[in-house]
Image 1 (cartoon, rainbow, N blue to C red):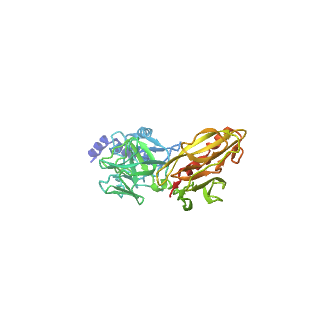
Image 2: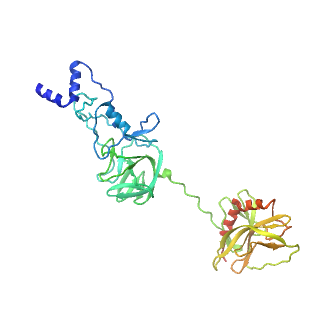
Image 3: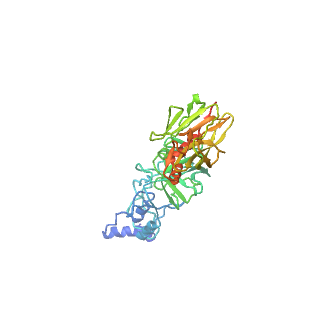
Length: 414
């Protein structure tokens, strides 16, 4: 028996050192194995002094423990550092196994007895599943966001975004399953090719070995980029649906419909419909008659005028669209007075006159106006500007753009 003991001691310095301690009465170090400590940090939330998470992974091979504190330092130095709490902390096994002896004298935290095998991770995925998973601990968080399409390739499920390398996602195994081409995650089903938003955090480099600290990696999975999916439902990242478009206002007595922005309002005016801005101010008036025709005589001398801004619009009619424009036209005589108006697209853009009719008049539309001044004269009512620059500023305002959009929404119903 002594001969066998001597052989074992000669082949295994680890056991020899442990025996030497017991023989001399010097207790062996029962503290934390530095190599084991480094290995247990795989995808953990333990943070270094800068608050970063240390990630250490090996690609497609079982963990092999190298000697002493120097090996532990090398393992930590080679680790990938990623920020944020990914909600992906795997639980440590109940009993750490004895490191595999390499013949280099690795100190042991368990001097005697058989090592306790690492328990198999608890997963909800079936054998042969294309899902990479991990056993979560804690509630997790949504430190970052990954958005892309679900792609199944060679028995492995990836996330693929346009212009970016595909990513191997590790889902929490408690809330995830995959069957018949459908990913079920937090009670919601996602088909292959469908876009999904996943909280969590990413890393690059090697991938966890199947069975290491609660991770399951399908044999066919290969990727230099991984994403540890947090325990946050994708619905938490979905943008709220925009408010439905307002229903068109139907003015049956005028034979038209029109739409205004959600924070604007249409009310019946003394004549036609008044258009109210969000502040409650009447900024335009809409009128229509099925019969066209305008006319009148000037009582003032002609004054130069110009079109300050024009936005093309189209008026839908039963006979087809009518090309029009929403404009700001200003008399540029002694006083700068102007108004916004809906006119035909081929109306002139400048000239001289004693009066401007701000109206569309033709057979398809009838007589249609969207303005505050059906007739604009140099000395009459209208919007008075201190300068042409002030008129240009109003023509570029959000109010003017909104009125142009209202003009473009008009539909002649009969």
